Image (cartoon, rainbow, N blue to C red; front, side, top):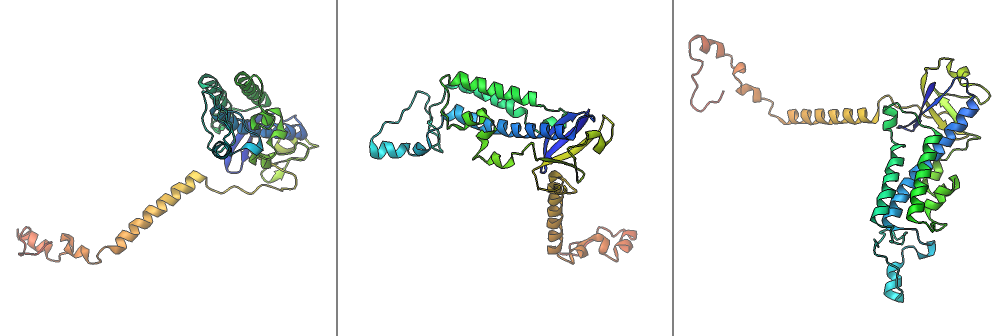
Amino acid sequence: MVVFHIKNGQQDGFLIEASVQDSNDELIRRLAEVWNTRLRVGLLVGAVRELAKFGPMKPQEDQGIDGIKEQYEGAAVEKSAEYVADPSGLRTGNGPGAQLAETLERVCQDAEDSLSPNLVKQRTAVSMELFNDKLANIQGAVMMAYPMGLPSWDTVALALGGLEGLDGTPAAADVVDPETATLWVASRDFQRDQKIGDRLGWNEKTKVVAKLQKEGSGPPAREPAVSEEERKAMMAHYFKRQEEMKRMAEAQDDEYLASSWADPKALQRSLRGQGQVRAPGLKL
């Protein structure tokens, strides 16, 4: 199988396997679906953790005004035994309880592991089946914690409902359209009416780095010659060397005159057995 390393900017993305006999159109659609589903899973991981801590989201008109209602209107804000005030004011503060919160955290961690760049280092490919399984686990845990369901405006409910749930979130800017997305390898795009083998050759053991682009974005920018870690190491070395040069410049230029090797009569005194003789007050 051909291994596609799909990168997101300078960050490692994920690995996908495909056959050289697969059509480019099928590949691009599958990549776009996996890409978008990863965005959903990533959004859900953060939102479900907030849900486990602070409970469901309030209606937009009630967000951030609990203190005002209690202080000026005398209204009693519902607070359960598990109440933890949400610093953002977006959620009710009534979490599901410690045991259910632990279950939610466990499925979140499992889902987060499926997004880890370590999978690339481990050469582990992902698939839609994997992410559908993570979504099902999250949905099951949420239903267990809130059997009556979540409010329709809750981010968790919206994201579980489908890709449209990402609208209005930062992740929405990264969603790609399977119909119009383009795939690029070595500054050349994949034509949808061809097969993978037409572009990469017919060796099933090929591995390439590819990038998925939105329509009209053109070829992705060329990656820098050095990685971010290498750049940081080079900057640290340069800074250290610069500090050393600064200290040398600040040192006395004639400091070496106090060294024994700079004494023109050192050899003569040594031959006469006077090497350890020093004039009073003179430091050599």
